[in-house]
Image (cartoon, rainbow, N blue to C red; front, side):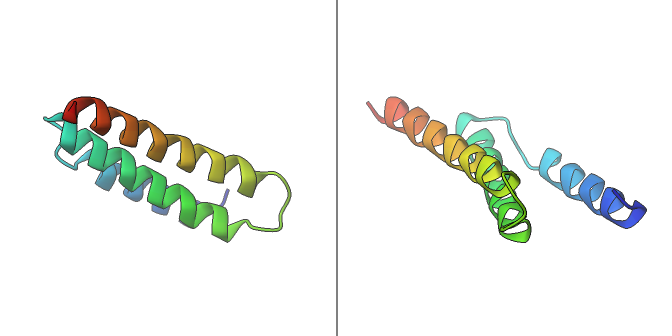
Length: 75
């Protein structure tokens, strides 16, 4: 990984980490943001082997977990 990509990844991680996450809704929103970033990464590496599918599956798993958590909270 080159220095520019490393710095950009670190800045992105810092921004996500500073999102408010004091309530379940807020940490779920933080999780959704991570899923969105993963989807961008999957698009960036599409066609480069297994990475895109692995990253896409991770994003889907995160979204599914948030959906289930919210469904349980609404019950």
